[in-house]
Image (cartoon, rainbow, N blue to C red; front, side, top):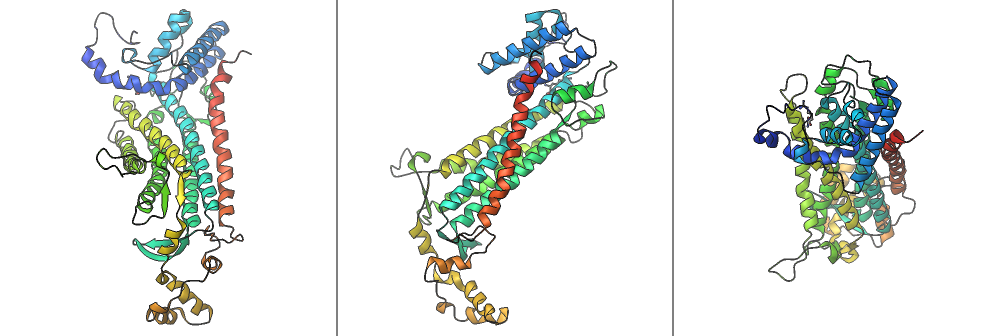
Length: 457
Ligand code: ARG
């Protein structure tokens, strides 16, 4: 389809079109629902301000709704020949309904259009990641609860350090994921500002209503200065990716632990065969490739964050085409994070805890610090008690039963080694449930915008 700006008498070299838009047009397929929202809100505002008639607006909205249906059933694709999603949709509407389609771009630029699409995209993807992260936090909580009776060595410097529990280990991921979900939601709030109407970066001299479009798209406010709107492209995306890469760090640590604890050497956990892959030469191999790839993809996402933050560096104020280049790392990072959350959630359901191996790893010396604390409770100064135990390490005795072991556990650390009185896990759940609700509400709000915009009154 024709480019919006092209002079038919002086066609652009195909090498230019390929270099500038071929890959970007494909990436724009991720922005179709967002561009439809931007178009619908803008059309409603144009009608409100008298730039198009109510009938023209209705025709545009109906056509946008038809495109939405086609897109949902896989029949609307942006291709390299379309240049971008904005061109594709404007052309499609114009072909379908004629004149009103040609008025859709009144008072806007693709520069503020893509900015708005990206804000809407960030809102939707951040809400959905936050929801998945909060759900996974709950999965870890449930896993911790099921594993509550299993003691496990705690390590520092990869050396046995103190007695701990599977619940404490799993609960750490619950809390980390709650932190991650919270950060994703706070980035959601940062992205929740409307740049639509900032035009190419210098506003427009028509009587557009930026408050109205912002409200129609459910943004909490208008981003005020039009030049700042352009200059903030990349900064908001970079902050969002910082939250995404923090989430990946949590998942990466889990992957590292799983790879270690499922080795024959540790053997603390085993995973169901359906989560492993085989070797083409060694018949016995059951490899946990999913965790290795997750570990590697933490770096891919961190690199995406760095790339998104680097691209705007040194650019002059206003739009430069460089900015387009951050779409790819942005979209890739979200898709990696989403699939990684899904993989971890599936794997959690296939872990067997090998109680005997865990118990065998809790060798007597791991209780040395507890022995010191017992002497402290008896009134001995800590340093004296420390040296006393250190000089007779061989005398340190493990507790006789799991109840004695439970007494060691810190009350608020989710270290539930068989202590129903331990409030740790309940405290964690108290954080997770409201986060799930907030993320769910944000996602529902994002999904409700387009149907509301095209609904017939
Ligand atoms: N694909 C472009 C981008 O992502 C859309 C904006 C194009 N604007 C322009 N002036 N060429 O930045």
